[in-house]
Image 1 (cartoon, rainbow, N blue to C red):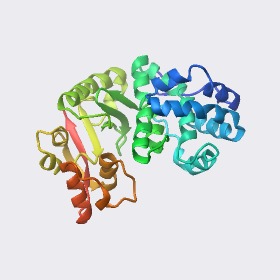
Image 2 (image 1 turned 45 degrees about the horizontal axis):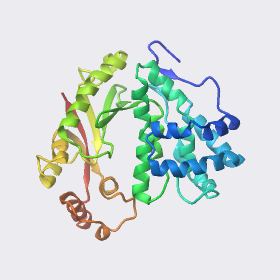
Image 3 (image 1 turned 180 degrees about the vertical axis):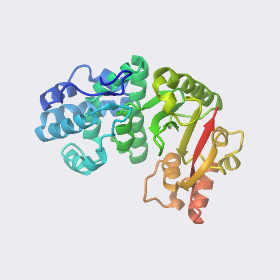
Length: 318
């Protein structure tokens, strides 16, 4: 651990392939998968594949390499592991097991939780809070299955950021710590695809964040953007759209969430909207997308007429 209060956690030594093979085949793996939020369906398939990875020297070496990248550092200024630069190579290796994306990346995440959990402990997170944060790995795997119909993981930049220790899951919403362009600390807001975005749950999450960040990161208050650390939030999302309350109704869950934000900037977000609403990645044909809800119909209309969907960067002060 570095600094007082802690600013970073680093490993005492790198993992070697022998240790990784032991971890991938340990009797405790099913319990680990549960703690990481992996669904029963994904877990059952993974448990068949992990011994095969451990038994193949080249696959095992690749998993060890990525695991050590994920373990390089967790903390305030830790850089996310550049998983995307390794994705094609690992997906090619994965074909020895089955076609698809991200199986070796998943294995690397499974054996690399020690450094980020040490950072969580140093900042006062409970065991339950720490595992809840990391259980987003299973959430990303569920999203992958919804999108591609198979076991895998493709949102690599997101889980790499999580493994730096700056993402926190507080009730319905997730929050991250990041620096603004001038170096001040900001609290970002994220909406995991875990069910209805009910206003009461959203309020509880913001209330929890208002307590969490001053309690666990009091040293950042003087370097934070805004006057009251823990009371100002930003959100960069396809959901931060000024037309959304009108489209789905101002009293709806999504309309209520969108209306909270003072929108400072807009950006093209058609692909994000299609991903989160339809579970599709490009290329896609708007005419082949389902039209069951008002939101789906509105997105398709904007795709077909060339307007596209606009996301926004919003700010909320409480």
